[in-house]
Image (cartoon, rainbow, N blue to C red; front, side, top):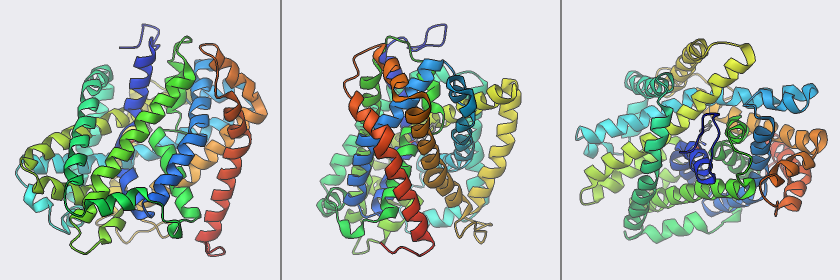
Length: 452
Ligand code: PFF
């Protein structure tokens, strides 16, 4: 593909595939379905889509343009445009440092399920309570977390990201195809239609500020907004690649895969419910509790399970590799460290924090921070606090510091900017207002002042 010697993406397709490859990961396959199930199905989906269309686009575009204009990655880009505002790059630089460890814990669960299917344990995995029993054992999940994290590190240290990227370009479409087949199989099962209704029909009695905050956090997470990653990819984007349509395609791809994953998992909860829909509130375990049941009911399901978890592992690895890459470049840029030293520091930090969040399901299950488990705390603090605040600061930076024109001019270098008015209106008014309202009302709700 796609990158010349200068490290630029030379074609639109190269840019879109690489960025989508990094964006599509566990956020789509694992996180989106469980949040949608938990927050009332259609009401969550509807909110998510509105947010992606309205200000997901504006934020992704703004970050990409900042990256391409400055040619700088991550933390240095804001300062390059306005030295006085360099500090705005700090939160987006901390976010991936905190996400990488617990992302790798989930990556470890994927490796465990792959091993399980490979070693013929598929039947045991269909049992209720299997996942809960597994994560609470402490030791084994730690081992699988190490395996996933080591894979990520070896890929980055060995400089074979390109190889992984190339492979993922073949494997991603296969993953989409397989997911589609599993969706078709699932939807043909009795009871699935109730699940589809739950997934797509909004029930606004379940709708409140927390739904919007969760949907907003998921949008940031899934599109890798406010994590410096889009700025980095933007800095690799050649000046002749049309920016607005590229961004739109990345969004479409990412959202399409999230919806497919939702259709794969949520109707299956209804199919295998036996009158008990409590799994809708299973949270992070949902994918791991539901899919083994789907595979067990399929002809050749043990094989499908193996292929599915291999492909999911690839999707997770392309994301964790780009997370580690972006954290490494932050350390190198900020403290002038060598690549090896940066990776060593991140390694130590991630192993400590990742182990703690994995043990939070087992030996450390009594440890709570703000009444959340260690894993949930990291997830909440990044998605529901730091990313919205960073996005708010980005809106401020673009609309009040450098001016929306700076972004528009950058976009117009390569193509006419058809959605310019919408972009300016969103970044200047809609996004900041929405973020402030959602943040304030969910804080009030958390402390019990508001009961919507
Ligand atoms: N967007 C990825 C996902 O949905 O799984 C997560 C992610 C990947 C975040 C890469 C940040 C990043 F640099």
